[in-house]
Length: 581
Image (tube, rainbow, N blue to C red; front, side, top):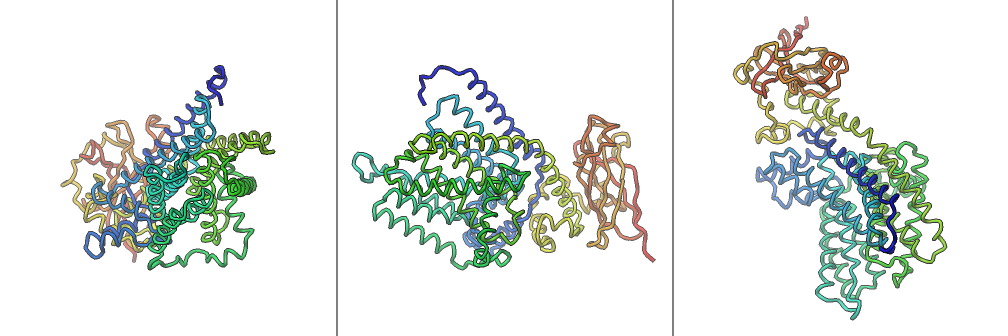
């Protein structure tokens, strides 16, 4: 587009609205991540502790632990970040979350750059398009990938792959037609980035066949092609050396018996972010996206002179779309047995969003050619863009509720683990084998890591009055509302109630359970209590849930922690564990 066009006030207004929405989306998503942060390992993160502990104990070498298999993945690069976090940052997960957000932001900006170069946009149009990309990339549609540090592998593999493809598309000197040191460097970078993607997540293996496709389309020299294949074979060999296939997933040969079901899974995987509420529409949109990418791929392979996809950026974007489609296919092969509903997981929204950004940009690139689709593509693309952004902004309003549920689960689990109460129903939500948590929890406790690094973690089992002062009853108010026995723990109880720190006019974040003057359990606030808010309208989420150990005949009382963690204030309510006859 020409830079000589007159200023368009409507376009400037649209750009202002778009950038405001983008800033709001980033702010709300990051606020959710920070506000509902709880230093507690979740699901696969527990395996990081096991591997790291073996290194610390000297029973495993660092490289062996780094490259060891995790399910069907070898996550050496993300695992390196996890190990650094455990070794130097108390294992609280802040480093992994920070790296996740940084990688995701970098990838978002890099995609913006590719789209700008592919479409040759004016300044104000760039502002609009860039803002829409940011809205999609930081949408709460992918909430799990924004609040769970372990998903660093998920955002990392797509960022590394995009960079790898961009480098591999760097052509030889256009005047001489031969490679120079300046053009060899991006090629070597592409190889190294492909290796990095491979050891970030299993689908990183796909960068090699996709890279080979790039080489054939770009007519690499025989030496260049041979070098790439050699590195690819070495990487694949290293990946599959001593590899064990996950028996819990669908066998690929069984999945291939139902091609239509595979296609449905892929289509829902791709289309769900555009239609999260209506699966049928998601299926149709996904099929449309798959078909469009397939056609563009064929056109690209036939386009030996690069007349249709006439820039390094546009070719990279098409390759990214192909990579995501192959990822969806590989995922469907292993997970189709879990049902089509599994394809709607929020973690899959990230690659699906990347797919639509790349595919739509490629479609608009096609519009600059003399193809018959010239008049249709802009309207179709505009419809999909409107649908995507509307879906993202609408879903953003429900994100705090989803994130709050995530936070409460982790708070309750931290309470149970600190109190040494084995609530199997609860702990199975943070680890598939909760009975294996004892040894890993002990490793964290011995080193004061993760949730054992919080200020009140070392109070369990200690005499109350030796660790905290006793505050006047006027400094707090609250009550034990309900007590239930935990079926999977003979002497464990689950308590709920509420607590307000009247001295500071805010909720009491921590509640301690005391039996015979010894702290035997802990609870954390965060639950909504509308009844309490009627009395204290300026104080929200004062409800707490926690666990404690108690034996028959003993009496339990609850104390709110006040005065910046220096004192304990007695709450109303007493529970006495009746001895059974």
